[in-house]
Image (cartoon, rainbow, N blue to C red; front, side):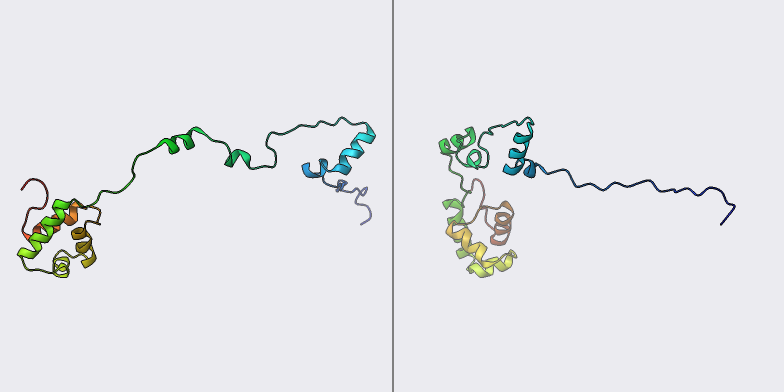
Length: 142
């Protein structure tokens, strides 16, 4: 390759260095002592509740006080006694079992049992199906 011209290098020099110390390494006791010996400035800061979980568990906030003072009963509505008796009476008048009524309205027998025992949460759709199947008015004034 003679006669082409002066040879030059296209590469720029690359300098490899160690990474800067992480914040944990800077706080290391050895690093702090070395900085003291060299005369560097060292700042110390006391953090409030540092390294504890006190703020999350032991402070009583307004919400916890409000919850403690709350006396509201949070329960679902249950089937009223009048409705239970009306369903049972209409079923007995038609001489049907709970399972037969359940089959007529396409529900499980357990649903009818819960309505007649008063444990069910009233559902207007199911009550409407029962009214149509039993031919009796179960809701409102008779």
